[in-house]
Image 1 (cartoon, one colour):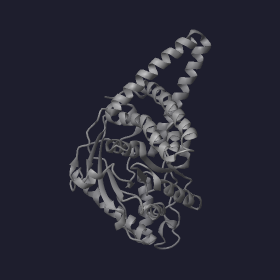
Image 2 (cartoon, helix red, strand yellow):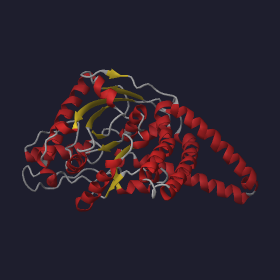
Image 3 (cartoon, rainbow, N blue to C red):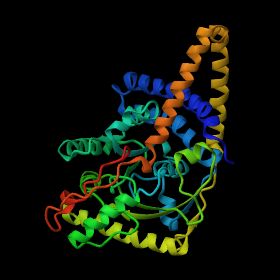
Image 4 (cartoon, helix red, strand yellow):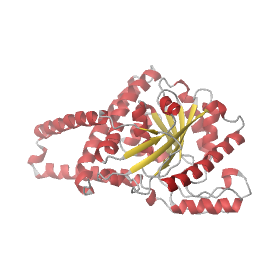
Amino acid sequence: MSIPAAAVIVPLGLFFFISGLFVNFFQAICFVLVRPFSKNTYRRINRIIAELLWIELVWLVDWWARVQIKVFADTETFRQLGIEHALVVSNHKSDIDWLVGWVLAQRAGCLGSALAVMKKSSKLLPVIGWSMWFSEYLFLERNWAKDESTLKLGFQRLKDYPLPFWLALFVEGTRFTQAKLVAAQEYAISQGLPVPRNVLIPRTKGFVAAVSHMRSFVPAIYEVTVGIPKSSPQPTMMRLVKGQSSVVHVHIKRHNMKDLPESDDAVAQWCRDVFIAKDALLDKHKADDTFGDQLYQDIGRPSKSLVVITAWAVTIVFGVFKFLHWSALLSSWKGIAISVVILGVITALMQVLIQFSQSERSNPAKVAPAKSRNTGESSLPDVKQDKQH
């Protein structure tokens, strides 16, 4: 199914932002009235409320665009998904990696407690960014002097989280593009490091901080590798909105947190070694067009998102009809003009959301002179970051 973007952006945007404002409103009410008395009760309620919004995007993937997400994992790893706290570390291959993560979290039953480390400006995004803020996402300025304390406090706040959560961390720091790969390769050559072919060089400070502060209460790291088969077009938000399908392969490997080294330097090296292995795994994926070293796990396409979307649709259509009848908004030219302006604003906001997800809109990478050999990430390529962590 391929539909012109203009024909779906307005109705989908209207639907998403009206439902999202309702969700934000109830999140705000709970934040003010419930959280001061019981943080855990607030978290349990917010988990349900947030999922009512986020599952709309799961529906977009599952039922509108019918994206095929194929998961490869051993039986024990697959069994553990959703029943334990986990730090999720992934390469950042496509524009919708975060959405793929939400789909997997929804299947595991923890969509409402799927968290991530994001760029600070993300929380300003209408509806979805506000929802993430209420849900305790961690927002960074990409200035380590400021972000170190933000991460420390954020990780510690999760210590008493009452339900299994996933915290996603994209340690490459930005989405993969060819320009950024070239910058990483040039840096690796200049420093005598393994030259990446399919990933960027990880920035390990955030990962080290996460392991340091969370190893006492988070039992597992889910190492996720995302690959796009050669026969599939690259998935993007615009393709999703237009109802165009793609195929995404996801390889998941579970690591026991207790098995990681103790020292910060050794943890940083562990992370770099994981990405070297991930690079080789993606080489094999390119050759075989599959992650054949692990079992294929069928995650299905459950109808829950379809049910929620239907309930939202009935509620919103009924509410809009009653409002128009009560206000007689469309009975005058002034009312029609106001309606057109509202639709224009919603269209613009949808375009912002779509552009926010597009890696091709990010600035090209530039390589800064290396300060010294093997000095870690202080001398990593000075990549101008795109808009989403």
